[in-house]
Image 1 (cartoon, rainbow, N blue to C red):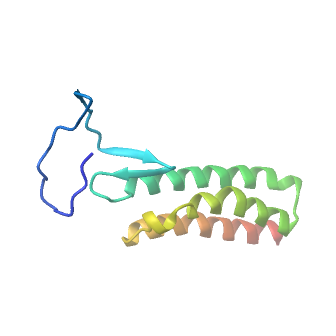
Image 2 (cartoon, rainbow, N blue to C red):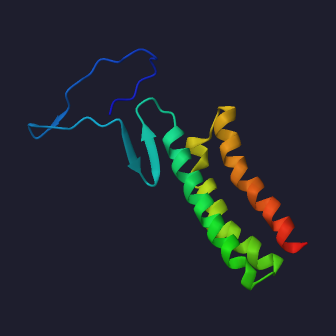
Amino acid sequence: MTFTRSKKTCIIYEYSLDNNELARVHCKKDLGILFQENLKFDQHIDIITKSASRNLGLILRHSKFFFDYDTIVTLYTALVRSKLEYACVIWAPTSDFLIKKIEKVQSDFSRVLQWILS
């Protein structure tokens, strides 16, 4: 993977280590963050929002066993929001589409929490 500031196609170099050519990849996961060649994080945000939505569904399916506000919010913070906020300084979305995707998970929780507690 080669990083560049240029929006045009960059010069492709063949990298090697101990005379072994390294395979070219277009995205690489490092410390839980999926880096793309163009330094956009669309795929990373897709993955974390799907995972957070899945965890949110788990909380909501099991919330029928407890209706305590503090317990539900603690579970949300631990299982959902931690996924959405992990290393957000690095991958912070700049496009409205990606911001809305993340906010949808948060608004789903708010809407359902209001329904559960009413």
